[in-house]
Image (cartoon, rainbow, N blue to C red; front, top):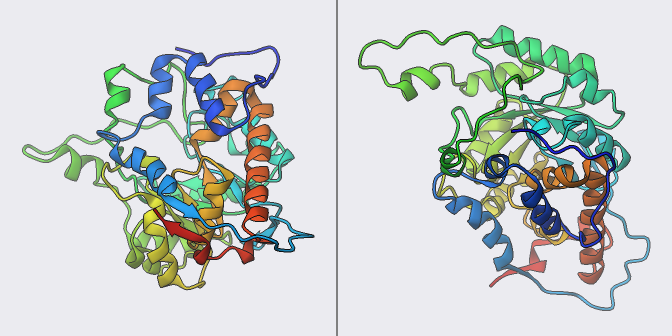
Length: 365
């Protein structure tokens, strides 16, 4: 099993949307790698509903509006951004392209999009940050606070501008599609920023492999409080679907949250993330930035998420599709396409800026 390698980055002539990249990526990738990338948890109900929920949201256009001078700029975590698209943390990117995260970082730099480096990246955070674009770093709380602090200090030293602490996957989801095809990481592929794991301690007789094994070192709210005190970087808590958890994250010191169901890859039948967004936005009422993740495939999806309370959106699978097909050029092209789709949607909806996008623009089918 290996990632495809191409001597030239060429975008196929019929690729004009994220979905077109998906079609080509499926044809090009090893079927086992595609199952890992495209699949979700269990029966993939949440994965499908993430997309169906966006389709169910309709937009009522407003005509004859003056949108001259319009733009997609915003400020997030103290940084001026050209548009609201962020590359979400996706691990093991050398599965999909020989340059892996380096290609994604190059594209992000060209398109002025923050790249959130996965804890499971196949390149070091220093090498990725060296590509020149704005870089964030994703943290999974490690087995010890000392190990977590070492990751944080490394991210700070590399010039990362924010941390994402992922809280919705203390254990992996049941990925049946990947299991059926026998997916496993290729020999020698390692998480470049993590130390090699030792053997876990043996379980006591009668103990649960889940509750007493995999969940033994799972973090709690006290760990989030500790992390936010530890670093000068803004910390976003990723994987929030309930308003109470959103509020508690801010109480723990988070600079913001990410409304996400992990792209439908962890708990099947969790609600579509876009359906969870309005209640969370209403509860926080502008107290902190809200990022949105899970199901964005079009610039119009970004418009809908912003209308329902998000400040910016993260994309995951779509940029990996583009990476698989055309490397850095593909990722840059995808980001440009999404931004253009958002601009056209805003213009047709009579919105000059992101702050003009309102919930009243959206209706439910």
